[in-house]
Length: 268
Ligand SMILES: [Zn+2]
Ligand SMILES: [Zn+2]
Figure: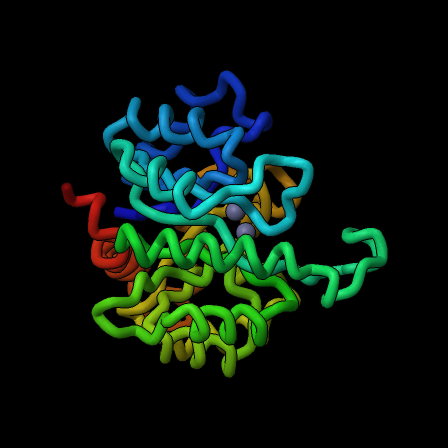
């Protein structure tokens, strides 16, 4: 039993390939996947995919890297989150990676629109009491500060959620855990140079950990560089199993249980 907590199955890489992907998932024991939305324009397709298959769920949100797309309001997110199989708000967050190359040389100060968009998602999540799927890259201090400013403190009133595709330090993991968030590891954990990240995965409590592929990106070793798909998520579990000296099945079960605990509406 394995659960892919984050994948993008509506991306063009998968066009016409759903039967093969679902077959590969079944063969690999990957029972469930959360299909992540990155624009409002994409949402209808993501939600339809989840509505079509028992073991797929959907999120609603606009990725921090996306520009020249519809800017979501709290109401846009709230309305869509009420549709069947929508269990999370995101992916949302902040991305300050390679500002020069990727953001046309704009400064972090210029990224106020990202921070505002992130706040909109947090407000929607708190209103509908669904967890956040958070993307943060080279922006962990602002990500944590904004979550706190918006009232996220791990209390019963908090939305909570997951820091997806975690690549930050142990200190950031600790701070996210302290705010009540889960930590999700991707195929990056299997990359040769990712020893620092493996050290983080060795200490994150097992009951606060998720696994994901982030398909079509970041295929784990031995498929690194190829198109990723949810059937590869056991390779992430295998890496954690080695770090924790536990059977891979145990990691699959524990992270699947965590998925149900966090995204409570998968049970309804
Ligand atoms: Zn992401
Ligand atoms: Zn993603």
